[in-house]
Picture (cartoon, rainbow, N blue to C red):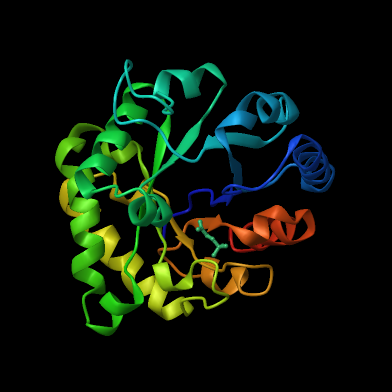
Length: 253
Ligand code: PGA
């Protein structure tokens, strides 16, 4: 349907180190050439400055993994959107399931984070997804719609500027991927929800995440409403991440 460029974003999570980061970005730069898709890496906050320098002049965009819902002030340990922007951050993950699960982030908090990012000129990658229990109870659609609705509600005028990542929690880091049909079905629901909120729904990138790898990426990315991937484990290995990027290229049509 849409002819937009796909986006492949790596999520390093709490992995990496000065040497490993340099080696990984170096290998990605060597292998990338001029990619036909967008490429980003979401790095741990302490490495934003390092990776900003490492990706300078390349096609790789810098992403952060979280942002504070507050503008500034007495919030020990948090980083504001303005601080992320100071390091050339182009995207920030908000509402990753690990933040929702281990840090108690509610839909309202996630929506506020997306709002802060947008206000600072950073594109939020809003993560939504159901747990295994919720899927088995037939609640998938209801859960992802509720998560996205909170973001739409307070960002209505800017909703065309977000990225959405559908990440079924049961597929994250488990090696168990949603089938292309399962993923496409949820993406179609999300697209419909966005279409009800904005005329720009067709251009909002909808990424799939959850055990995407060099083997399954092409099939997932070939689905009409899958506009890219949010890649965890496989983004830490340059050859695998490059293969996923190549698969996105292939699906460009
Ligand atoms: P995974 O992680 O690719 O390792 O499953 C995806 C994510 O959590 O963003």
